[in-house]
Image (cartoon, one colour):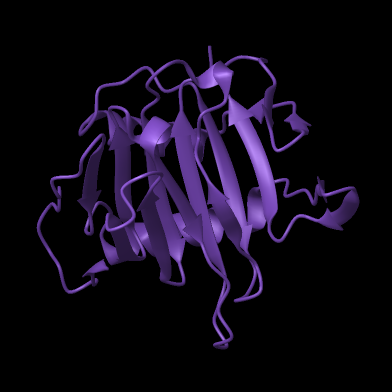
Length: 202
């Protein structure tokens, strides 16, 4: 498995079959990243949703919050979320992203990973509301966590990136058709992490 560690300082864009990925480890400087992490941790209306797997209902292993420029709901894993307004802080981050990727992002899903037990299983961001080839821009704040990717059919194509505090990861092209990604659990004692995934919801 290919790995990328946070000592990487330049833009990382590996050649991947059937997808596009760009990783910016220093998207935000440390002062900016600390500011946004504290602000979002304290001011976001975090919610705990239930998920049903094989007929059993569990607490989703993280807290979430959806924010959007419009009022269009977003559904994934049998959960339908109605968006909160896009705050000034989120709009500020959106403008920073658009300096790198000029895309009509209009919504952001925030995830709060409270500890190593919080996770996000293998999935693709391929809901119909996101369009045919969605672009996902993901900002990481707080605790570094490993981000795993694997190709759906080419078993040797796997990638693992240690997402830095203040980093930006952009997935595009046919990535959501052919690749799955996850944030796995860890038994290590770790701190909180906030992940913001900006997207365009039709």
